[in-house]
Image 1 (spheres, rainbow, N blue to C red):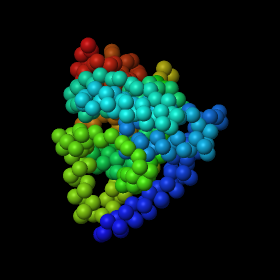
Image 2: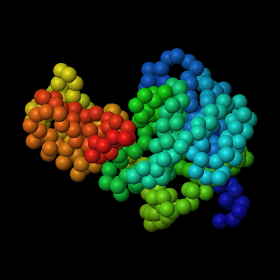
Image 3: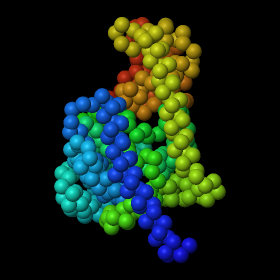
Length: 355
C-alpha cells in the first residue's frame, strides 16, 4: 500500500470516527445512562478517568465537544502511581491538556503496595479505588473493543466463569462498594483502538506513551503485544469475536442472576442471608450460583471453583457455633440456622489472620 493510500485510509477512518463521536458513542452512552438510571436531574456530572494515553485523550475531547449538545458537567481525574520516573511529567501534560479544553482536573496520588497478586494487580486496585473516590453521577472510562478482547482472553486463561467472561459493560453499577460515582460508563467498547488513533492523528492531538505497556513481563501486555496479533493473523476478526463473547456471557449471566435472586428469596433467613437447611436443599449448581451472586453484590471477586466447592462441602457438615470459610475476598459464614456471605475485613488473609 502506498503512503497516499495509507493516508487516505487514515482520513476515512478518522472521518467515520468523528461521525461516531459527535453523534454516537459517547453521546449515546450519556443518553442510555440517563434512561437506565432513570436520571432526570441535569446537568449530568461525569468524571473522566484520564491517563493521558491516546484512548482517554480522545474521550476527553469527545466529551468536551459533547457539552455543546448534551447538558453535562465534565471533570477529569488523573491517577499518579509514582511507579515511573515520567509520572510527574504526565501530571503536567494532563493539566495542560485539560486546561486547554476548560475541563477541571483532579490529581489523585496513590501508593501502590504489591501483595500476593503482583504489582500489576496492585496498581490496578489502587487506581480503581482512587477513581471510585471522586464524586459524580458516573465515572467514564476509555476502554475500547481491543481492551475487551484482551480481558476476555485473560480471564479465559485464568479459568473464569460466566461472570468473568462477561468482562466489561458499556453501562454498569460501580464495582466497588461505596463508590462516589454509582455508575461506570465505557462508551468506546464497540470501537477498535486503531479507530481512536486515527481520530487523534486527524485532530493533531498529543498523548503520552506508558513504556511499561511494552513490557511482556506483565501477562496482559504479553497477550496484547504478542498473542492477540498472532491470533488476529491466523483468525482475522478474533478481537471482534472475543468482544461478542463478552456480550453473550453478559446475557447468560443475567439469566443466572435472575435465578439467584429467586433462590435468594426462596431460602432467605429473616435476619439476612439464608436458612442453612433450606440452602442445602438447593441443587449444588444453584448453591454455587447463589454464593457467586451474593459475593459479587458485596462487591467482591467471586471465588475459584475449587475454593467454592470446598466451602460448600464444609458448610454441609456445619454442626453449630460460629463458622467462617475464606472464599478469597469474601467469607462464607454460618451461625445457628443462618448461612451468609460477607466481605473479608481489609488486611485479613485466607486463614483469617488480620493485621
